[in-house]
Image (cartoon, rainbow, N blue to C red):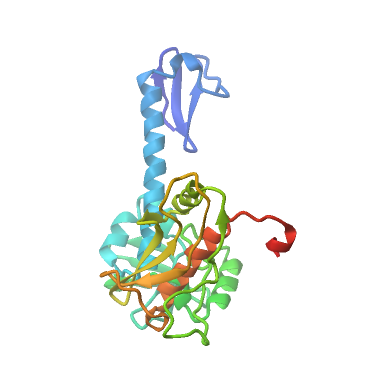
Length: 284
């Protein structure tokens, strides 16, 4: 932590916050308002904002690689690893080999060293695949066992992978059907509340639908839930969940892959959870 002058004080960054000390070296509880406009204070606060955005972007990118099943070149992972924000987002994610089998939890990466992993026997191993694969949890056959093992290892994933909610397509689902109504009918007193919830959850809204794009087996699929496209103060409710191809054609449920199914259901459930609940009977 390096201190820089700001008027009669000195300021620095500590734990992602701007801190201040007086001329005697005593650290203050807060930055005095009279130096709020000092270039050093303004610069450090702008740096804090940038670092926060950078951390969120790194985490979002790692989760996007997972959700879209995007293999990442080893060189990319080894180059970004020294950055604390990237390292925090990548650390302890489950990595699989080319055969789809779990290789271990990511603990280290470096040029010339490849990836350092903790395998399922608890041993430290190194691999150097051309492409790093971070699978969506719905694709992991032994997900519950991996979760238990992660707890034993003290794994704390920043990226939502092992402890991400997943939905499996029921065996009895009508493969010729085109929509899921399980989370339809969730009432909201004002349209803007539902639109705001979609944005808060990180989903885009387009044409009255909350949308979640997924890339699965090289094919683009979009999960969509109708949330309304009228005046912001009108009542609305969540509509059915559907999936469509890049041309906008609605897919039959039998055509929806496991990742697209899970992510679509996850979005629909999250939107529905914010509905107005009138009484305890309805809540049950």
